Image 1 (cartoon, rainbow, N blue to C red):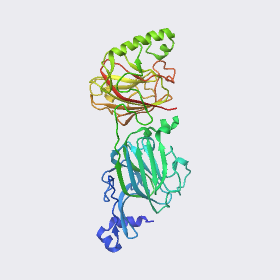
Image 2: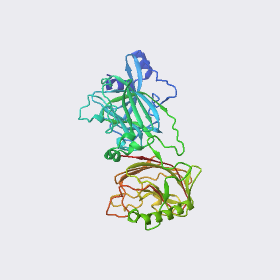
Image 3: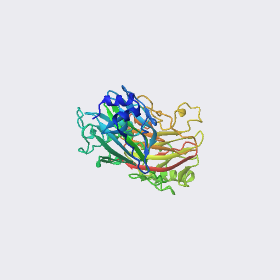
Image 4: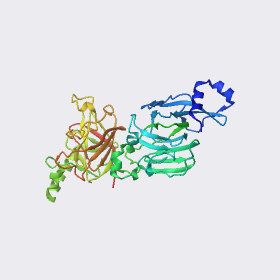
Length: 446
């Protein structure tokens, strides 16, 4: 194992002098078809250091068996979060790494551009020596999806030796191969524990940055390269594990929402069967007059009332693409409870609108946030995408890939003394402006 003195020497002496003294050759980086190098061998160009500990990260040359390797290193007593400047969605990532005894680091994937909590707001695959001195759970050893899924042990080389790792992220499936052995194969959709889901919103990010998460230990990386995988996104064709709520051509599976006061699901449930049939017939007539399927989208003319699914849902992950007109206003009701807000943040004098879409509009804001964390809206007329997770009474909302609501209780507008209904319809809110929806998919979480 090369000690820090070798690294200091290679940083302070000219490269030609090193070659003359050591008589060594530079190792050539891997050249693989369709792969792009993430390390130029000379600098941290293409990377950003978001948090800094001690000496942080650097670039140096390690001389090993007469060969000089250019490496990125995490300094002893240093580190932090070093993220790629570019974002990636589906990919094959390959890299080599060498640990010092007991060293701890991590590989961030699909991570947001932020300084902390990337194991939760993104995903972290452990980079950890087997001799790490600390009590570990199975899902915290090397290669594991941190605190979520345990990797197989036995493929990691001893400290001081190089390891080769491949990570494949394709949709919701994450696989890891270490030194030729597959040590992890996890389908995110198979994770159904409510506590895990609300604690790890990063599981639901479709893309983000790649990075190294240093924890004060000396670790070396080289031959870092990536191949982006083509992601096919067909209209109204559900991703694996999801079911389409809209078939692209008709409003099958949808019905009109009753007029007040029976838009309230509690009051509607109190109706007799005959009353409910009468109310629903009127609501469906209203739906037919103002909602239609056109060009692969659900279209609302700006008149009439809201649309709702015929089925009720409990815990779920929901995908919705939507767009509005200037000064438009709408929302998504979860289990019949308002609402994940949609509006034009640039065309209204309302200071809440300026904060953007995605917030839980009807929360009172006393302990349960009502406004989004960031403004992530696209310009009016462009499509936006919600990814909404509803577990028990808590909600995550992603808008255009950014987390805008994190683990927040959805207050029950219909009865503030009670949590949201345990089951209910998905509703598309009519609020006096034209609307378009497409790619509505749901994954029920049992």
